[in-house]
Image (cartoon, rainbow, N blue to C red; front, side, top):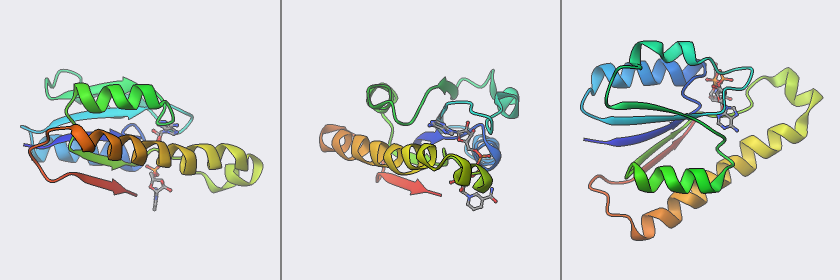
Length: 131
Ligand SMILES: NC(=O)c1ccc[n+]([C@@H]2O[C@H](COP(=O)([O-])OP(=O)(O)OC[C@H]3O[C@@H](n4cnc5c(N)ncnc54)[C@H](O)[C@@H]3O)[C@@H](O)[C@H]2O)c1
């Protein structure tokens, strides 16, 4: 049984991934962390609301305290990282936001997971998948 944190789970790839995973591996625990920006839509996940192995957390991947808390409280062993500023046109208009989310945000997640794994007791081999 895996314990997954899926960032950007309300987005295009994320929502499809989450629905697929929950259907295919119903015993796994899956937590979505999503800031619900212009690209996120919680409705994409509405069928999972009553699933006891699924939780949705509204938040930012750059919020280190929140990420730390989630990793520990959910005993996460797998991060599927899909949260991003993904619209190329917007990257031309507002490049700083892309830098902050896609680079600094990703680094925040990596660093939080690395430090967490120094002391965490996880059963499965840890996995960090960045799309
Ligand atoms: N869609 C594609 O065809 C495609 C192809 C190749 C690679 N990708 C990459 O895969 C990743 C996901 O793509 P997508 O199409 O699902 O993107 P998307 O824009 O549909 O979804 C991104 C999700 O991330 C969330 N998000 C944004 N900033 C956040 C933050 N700071 N904290 C938490 N959540 C945040 C948004 O609310 C949204 O739900 C991106 O890195 C994208 O570049 C996408």
